[in-house]
Amino acid sequence: MGATAAGLIFLGFCLVLSSFIFISIRLYTVHPDLVRKISKYILIAIFWLVFSVAGLVIGYRIDSRHTETYSRGMKSVTEIWGGSINQTPPSLTFDSTVKEEYENKKTGELMDKTVLVEKGLGFASQDIILKIKKNIRQKGLLLYPGYDLQFEGKYVIKNYLPKKNKIHFRMALPSYAGNITNVSILLNGKDYKEDTNLADGIDWTGELEADEEKEIVITYRAQGSSSFQYSLGAEKIEMKQFHALIESDFENYDIPDYAMAPSKAESDANFSKLEWVGENIITGQNLSIEFEIKGNYGKLASKLFFYSPISLALFLALLLLLAIPNRVQLHPMNYLFIIISYFIFYLLGSYLVTFLDIVPGLLLSLLVSTLILLQYTIALKKGKEIVRYNLLSTLIFQWLFSIAFFFPEYTGLFITLATIGSFIYLSRVTAEIDWEDKF
Image 1: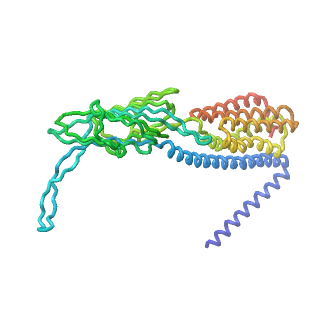
Image 2 (image 1 turned 180 degrees about the vertical axis):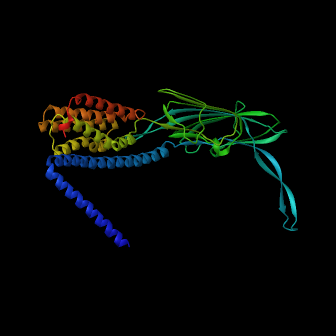
Image 3 (image 1 turned 30 degrees about the vertical axis):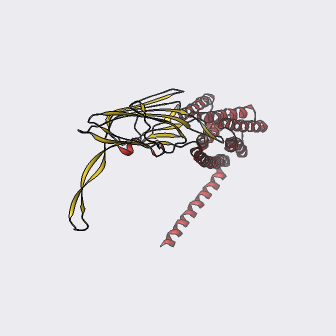
């Protein structure tokens, strides 16, 4: 059954192919010029397809290389300077007794015993102030968002129990930080010296009368990179009052999807200020912020290459629509050399962005590609029109397209405006042309 189906499919394919060959020969016999024109445009389309695939392959290679290099550099920065700092909030517990049943091994009887346990207690308030100053780290040509952190946490603890009780306050120092320095602890405004080893965290234990309060202020400095997180969601602590403030000179930042949204946010070109305020709060979300910096254009370069099929298609379309009505005769081989000259930008740029900064690398690639394209169109001796058409097309769909990617928020707008502008120009210069005899 399978062999029969395969045979029928092969027979059908042969019939379709034979019909296509017959119709092509018949059409060529009757309208040889039309067949030559169609073949010419099909060949140009094949050239476009081949170089489009090449552009996508180069873009994928650049993206993979950038991701691998950036990850390797980020690992080095994390080990030398500091990583994504994670600060867990302090825990607050009180001593309590509970009765537990146990079996007397001698008699086999079930007996009760009183066990001392610690139970959670909510905070009267937490007030967190973070000052984050960027300290950009560099590995090769890549930049990483390192920062210096100044942390201050004010914690008001209160005995909400109806009687005097022993209260335990514990807070670990941040994880994934670089050097942690200038650790300071104030208890009701006075230096707290009873904890002699801060490496295993900050511990305070004391007895509080009913409704008695104490304020513990903890400050330190640390080095980190990429992000900061205050992990409120891990413990789900109850806080009567909560306030957090982040001040940073990182102008580009992001609040992750899983994090608590700020109550207020202000930012300009040099400064960012975010504030969180809450009352009677128990949250499953963390206070988290991620930092970004300009200067790493590996993703931009790969995106530029991923758009190369569109750029090349629009370039060829504009060139054809300007050349055809003006009787500028170009052989498919001429178009091939024009496409190669245009594509040199992508080929050369893929290597230059590895050895140079992105701006001079792309600029040099654009200049080389444009100069090669101009010298070839001049050498064709097809008139000034073909030189002008090629220059106009490459300025719009190569230069402007490349510049647009440096403004990610407006890339689509720039490309759309450039395309609309070229359409307006094309419609004006071809408005009086009789297209009937041009194809």
